[in-house]
Image (tube, rainbow, N blue to C red; front, side):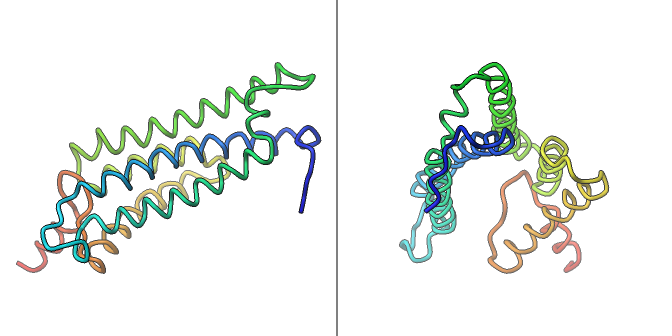
Length: 186
């Protein structure tokens, strides 16, 4: 077992642990919310055919994985790194403030996507805007072309997989893939 002293870690390693802790907490909240709300989706023919089974399964497994990540970062000293301690307190405080700011920006981005964009736009456009913004903020090692390709392809692949394979419509005002398929048939 690797029992290392958190004070001996490098600054990037400490920031990674602090960010992992904050992201883990955010994932715990989001996945717990989806898990609990999946019980309130109507299931008229019983739980075997309930549409809430997929979000329940995904929310539950994501909750377990987020708990493992969060506990691991706590074990590695993330809370101490996040809230200070040691000689270089000002530099650590600045880095933890940056980590905290980035985590809150990610949470705010998810909230805007879910509660605002999906209310007024088709899923693919809302997901494109969300992914474009998130990759711009958090993916420093990529080019603009890479970020745009990911932001364009992922929403259409998700829609095609969920609707084409599972028959599950995605949230949003309407669905461009669904409308395109309807247009092609008729």
